[in-house]
Image (tube, rainbow, N blue to C red; front, side, top):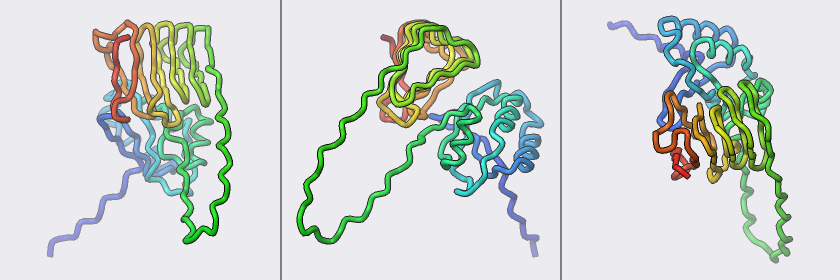
Length: 246
């Protein structure tokens, strides 16, 4: 009888290239030893293959009660091998909190709302109170250049930058991003899932742009029609980055 093949063990992490989201680092385990062993094996033959490409941790396969991995160590290990993780997605509240503390962005962080079952009969319709007035969040204004390693975040609204966003700097907003200067670093709008958010700049030379978790990196300069020129960045069909001249 032919020998029965044993199933291969699930790797601690997997890398996946997607059309819309670039490199996904799919975590199947949060255990330090398992991750350390697999990273060493995975990158042994191609230590510099990715060349600093941006990546997102995909946490959807981890158990709901999984302890958070050592995010700081994991980020450093992958950066030393050519990947540049900047965010997590599909993370539990505990994983997301630990990731945020380590400097990672949490994509699609809003929790789904559970719908209660409707009662079989309503004796009388209760009066419906008027909805509470929405609170307007003023735009955050930055009037100094952002250096490499600096990160600014506008929670609940837009951000306006009046100086250069230099390579290695990050601008993050739950709303839209307006950069009235060269945008040479990273801009992540709609950080909590707002697909209507946009990015505007008077000089596009970005390393990475993202709207509602859909992002695009620029290994070389953007298209000639927008490179170094005023441009806007938006989502089409809630899934595709569109870059247009202004």
